[in-house]
Length: 213
Image (tube, rainbow, N blue to C red; front, side, top):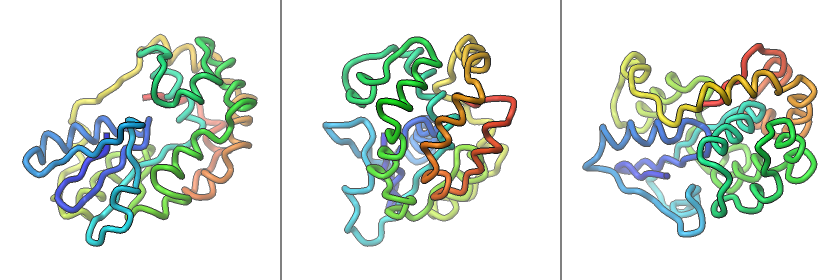
């Protein structure tokens, strides 16, 4: 869910630890918080406050290789259900991870890119600050400081309870079946995201573990 805290609008991009950040904001700023909803989607983007002066907008992104793995693991936990992201889910649904990735590549390769553009604009140009999931605690600390919400220690952020943790069995499946070839396919079709947010996809392709939380 997206949140307005005082004059700061936090946009929840799916699978970027948004639920964890939302819970942190809810626990620490409950009296100053408004939930921003859209009847058509769980995730509300920049448009409600696009032309309103004095509103800071914040969001987080994630490298596309891990993002799709996290999306699939989430669906394995909560199942494929009609509703939000119906077009993508209808085209790409699979309980087999490699098949899911191949469906993404052949049937809807721009889904993550489209999601980003709809929520925070091309290059994130509709928001004040874009943090990275890969640098979660440091960037979230920076966001809190920039927003004027306060200075928090990295330890307090690290100690805050994780949310939406995927089952270990799904991590094992992804580690065993997310081949270099599949990662390259995702990387090739997400070069714009890599350029916009300065991701070295070659380095991510060759790392030993895939983060799916």
